[in-house]
Length: 390
Image 1: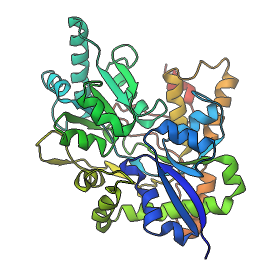
Image 2: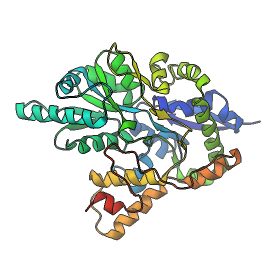
Image 3: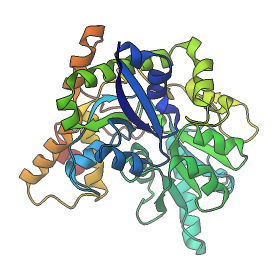
């Protein structure tokens, strides 16, 4: 059988696992595809190379197709996500000096996000009173789950993300180096970069982002809509291959082999034991400390982890509005039109068509609105009320 070659881009993170596994463990070949993987270090490069056609599809940040549909931060491009690649896997990590200051203000290892956030707020206010420089916190891209989770946590704990701290972009593979060099005081990124910062003896993990938003959405399979329309069979085959890869990643007997596979230099290129921590959810929160098991830290296929929820797309859109990445809508009609554009970025119809032959269940209700640490709810049917509560 002649295999159809497809080139896929990815960033070296634990959640690139489904793409690597589909290529290396034969799931792509079983669907008639030859998957050729290209590693990139920044999400901006992933986006740009996908847009210009260097990649057929890519490992992509969940909000990126929404930003592309809305033309925010870039030209308007018809990018879509016909599949999610799992949930969770991120954490907020701070430099050791920042953690020591937080401890003095009531933080504690493995404490709830609210307690950690209140301690950080006290640190931020003390620095302002003393005339010290603002804390600099990094995230991986302006249109990323990490950015919105970080802002959500800060704001809910009384820290203004725009006025009280300085937020900057650092690509994931450079987070540890930036922290070591004192360029940043903390970051929100996916594994294994949090664990690697701790292993380097320079940081403490403050909270997993799944404690901020339970089973928070993460990466997606990104592609150009016109390519998916011209190649429906290849699109469906790729979704099926990645679905099977996601299932394989979650099998207990796969964890050792997966860690060794991702440790190869062409993929993540970091020690297998550090990579394995994120897969098991057993993270060392501080240098020299025993591992702590973080329940529901990351998932791939379980809990409908591969289903591209339109409700998630609308939450990402709401955050773009909340944090003024989009100019204010001139009218209710424009607000609604933008919401419709955000909806176009996620394609559960393509997902459902692809996996029906596998007998995969899809959610009866496309809703992922609960589980925020501050108990605030999100109703995707009433975006205006969410953004402007009474």
